[in-house]
Image 1 (cartoon, one colour):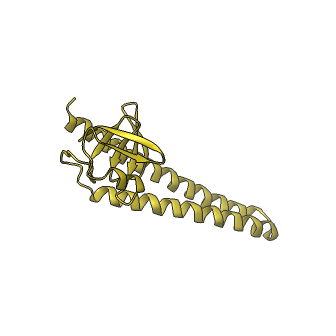
Image 2: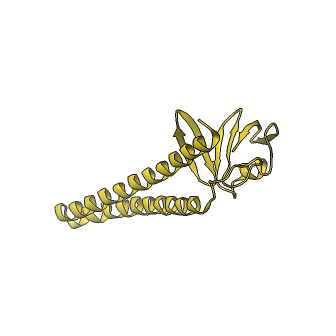
Image 3: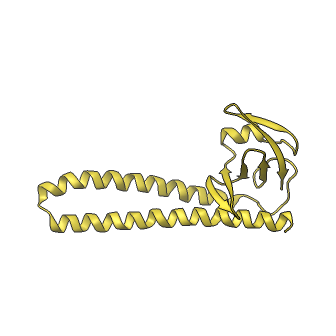
Length: 151
């Protein structure tokens, strides 16, 4: 498989991971709403008030996480993954001796049995690797990464 096909698979795996996480959070929110309705219908008012606070906190946490994932998907959709790169920049796949990265998305995902970390341009690690080429190194959190491939 050539690098273009490989990159396409990596980008699609990342997209699927983001969409899967959004679906899971949405399902969790629906279950929480259903649970809140059932609790209100089945319990005395004084018990409902205690559960209501807990459910509202859970709903707020889920909504924050969902908002983050939706923003991640929007950022992902604005990145040009269609070209080949010889330096690290948004849209590049970066294979190092330590980890594999996709610049332009946030979150971890798997592709063909390999782990990838999606990073955005505002991530501190991106600042360390930005504009580097194959064979160069960068250090983050006392770990030195040697770039093996960029595409």
